[in-house]
Length: 160
Image (tube, helix red, strand yellow):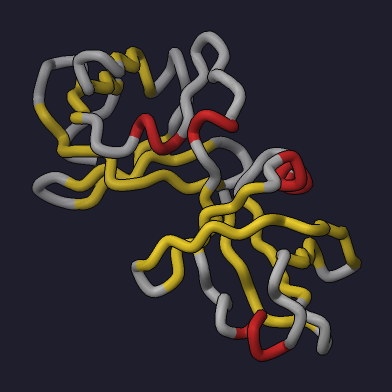
């Protein structure tokens, strides 16, 4: 859902890079699971605020700059049960990661290694015989998403 940045001030505030849309939506989730050095640590969000430099948060039990700085770079996760269900023709990125990607001719291009937001549309990062960046444009580039079969069909030339 996001990543923690540098400590701000002396009272434990941290900068937040939110991957939610809109970014302030992180405030809807009080229980955060922070991935710090391959260890998951459950924390409770006390406050989220918007500043001219972006989002900042205050977490329960983190009340000094040193304590905040120890969380720098932590990945913010929330429990799947706390998320609203995806709508029709909507998917969480986590559901797409690992899907096999095939083109219209049935050729495997690899698996979804990750996604990235570009502003215009999200982009699939597909890792196979090489790395491919495929725009996630439903109906045009992405023709079918089948979570049960763990497969994604795309209109993409393997030479691209």
